[in-house]
Image 1: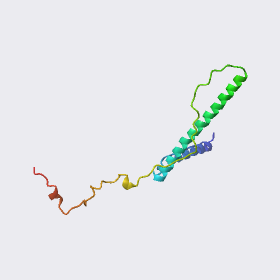
Image 2: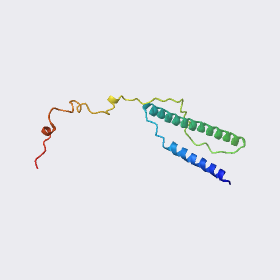
Image 3: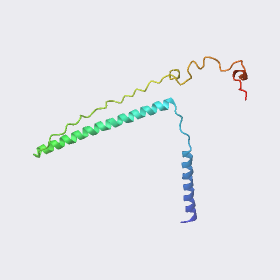
Image 4: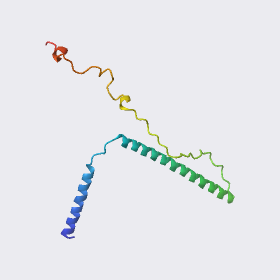
Length: 135
C-alpha cells in the first residue's frame, strides 16, 4: 500500500471515531407529559400487536391440524382424538384510553395547607426566638 492510501484510511477511521463520540454525548430528550403519553400509547400498541400475532398464529395452527386430520382420515389412519385446547382469543381492535391525569393541586405534591398558613418571617429577632444556652 502506498502512504496516501494508508493516510486516507486513517483519516476515515478518525472521522468515524469522532462522529461516534459526538453522538454519544448528546443529551437525553426531556421527559414531557406529552412524550410520556406517547410512549405509553406506543407500549400499549406493541402489546396489542403481540396479542394479534398470537391470535393469528393460533388460527394458523388450528388450520394445519385440521388439514392433517383430514389427510390422515383420507389415508385411512386412525388418530387419537384431539386434545381439548382453549379456543383462540381474538384481541379485537386497538383501543387505548390514557390514564386520568390529576392536576398538581390534587396530586398531593405540594406542602400541606397547615404548613403554609403563616408567613415564614416574623418581626421577632432570631436571638429572642432561639436563645443559646449558657455553657
